[in-house]
Amino acid sequence: MVREDGLAIYADYADYMANHQRKPGIGPWQDGAGKDGSKVGRGEPNPDQVDAYIANGGFFKKHIPMEAQFFKHANVAWQDFAVGMACRMAVSKSPSSLS
Image (cartoon, rainbow, N blue to C red; front, side, top):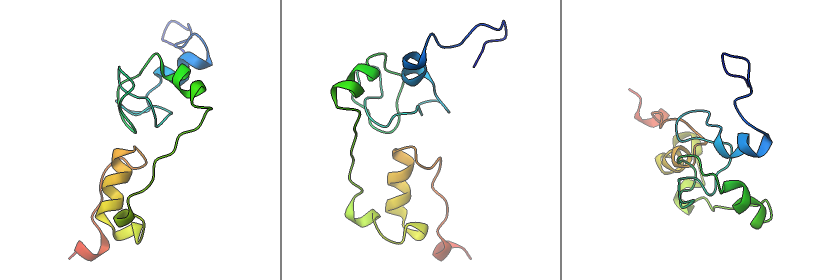
């Protein structure tokens, strides 16, 4: 990725991973977002996110709430969880709510 003047946007891969956002608040990693690293799923870029990722062994886990685990195509709890984790961009109407 380059700026209009042809220079690289990011200094290196670590800079890209810590600062790239697909959309505002949505970066490549789920854990350690936000300026202080306290947000999960969505948040501002965190310059310490790479170090936190390494310290955690390159692993992140978040359990899907029980009420969100089934019938994901028509489950508002799943959609709310997925939007919060940036797996989906927005909640869509479930088939059962369409008229």
